[in-house]
Image (cartoon, rainbow, N blue to C red; front, top):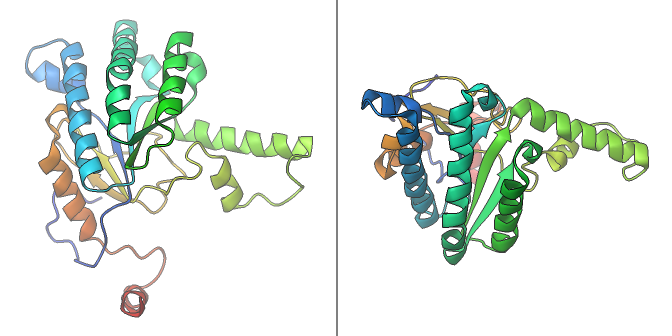
Length: 256
């Protein structure tokens, strides 16, 4: 797997990524390295989110998806989960109006039923308030898992067919795409994971099929605009073939 930096990658004419998806890993380790409670790391991670959102808005990225809380994160110590929920709520209350003023749309993907009624309402309110914004779509994956996403899509399709809402038909990729939580959004062009781990951890398993991967040892609270630019430089040096040969890609580029 490619790791930090754009070195030794084949240059081509790739445009800026339309959709960047990030697993924000390393908050706890960042705090532990400084002999601080893990809570401090999560608070510092929120500042990194603001930096990345600002960069994407300025540089015309269409979609930024952030893996905030996975369906597996409930296995963490209860005190840490409680802290994350509190921080999540506080961040929403503080940031929704700011996102709206900057023409940024907020979306959530994942199973919301495990969250408190108050948090679910705040999430829905944020989506409604910002739904008409067009500068950038920030997608927050909360209690999200790729397996869950595909299962709920298949379930929705079968229920619609059973009820007559959809006609009997083969299950196609297009039909599945229409029922995923990311329906209507482009698939990620660039996937970034901070913190040194090199796996996707049940994140957007369907959507990442042809996404360029970028792994960095930088812990999330230290991830800044320069870090994101390094990842984008790496992306722009990749050759995205989607099953074609290099010659076909080159010919298509020449004929555009």
